[in-house]
Image (cartoon, rainbow over all chains, first blue to last red; front, side, top):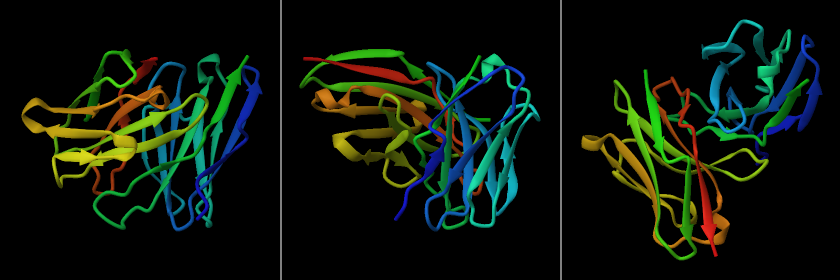
Length: 115
Length: 114
């Protein structure tokens, strides 16, 4: 069973640029959630995708957007990067609907630095 | 809305001593509660979870936590600390039932003193 993978592992961008982060969900999972973890903080929920549709969103501006593909992998896109977007971005996959609660399995994260 | 508060951003214990990391939650509906561990430059690993079954939950690596509704707490304990336990620990809450958004605390950094 393949776990959750994310790419790239590290990324450096400049303010105003756009970035795309990728996540491959665990085999058999249909849901991907994205979290932002700023340095010294706990992860914050960005949004969740279930069967290619957004299924909940946290308190993040519209320049944070996402996609989920038919194979349930996902992308996180951030436009007009700001210095405060520097963080570890975590992807988690789960199997929504299998039971009353479905564990989220986290990937290793992508470290984004905005200069 | 739900939230968690982790008391103590840094905790230091001697090797072999009791580990106690505190977490209090707030939720308008019965919560699901979790403890995750994060090692440097890595993602999150689930230690244990409470999903409305037994109130005393046992997890991996000898950790356990007790759900106390009257105290709105879910503290993490381990009887004897090991050097390998040094990491960042996060408490999280969710309401489940199709809304699996995790709300995390700010974390507690655990240091083990040899």
